[in-house]
Length: 195
Image (cartoon, rainbow, N blue to C red; front, side):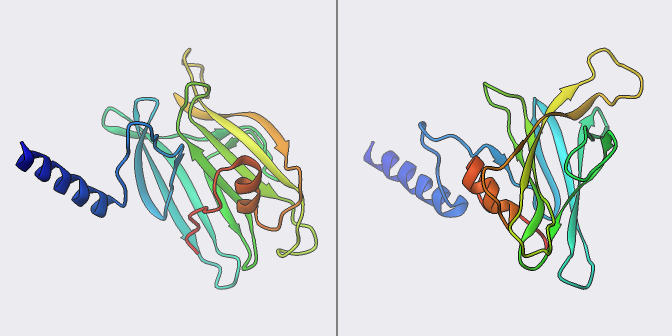
């Protein structure tokens, strides 16, 4: 019995070293899904999703990332767009998200959050008004998009998409939207920017 307990403890310690931590029964995984440069795969609403995130170089301090979302439907990957206006993005459908700013501060970023008992999977976009420069503190807008389904098969709409739910303004002004996401929404300050 002692030998089995020693082996189990050794395996748990190895798992902890390998993965950086071991979850206890009271701990829950972080709600955010990290979308890093390259391809990320994860499950939302019981379906296999993939994102592609790539750096768009500018050869200055204003590189930005472009992010697209996809869902697997049998053996086909399908685009999952966002619907609804936000910040300076006019029009209804947005097939890509951009993340960027300047060397001083990020003006646009987002968090992808897993589903919870109180809400479906959602994207929270943070966009800062430009002001006089990239280094200004200014108004930050948070826009919430929830994963939605085209249950009725309505023409012109994809099977899955992120639908705008609401937009709110941060209580304070910020230079970097990641500070706003952290301080006001408690979603952390790491936005995974590639540049």
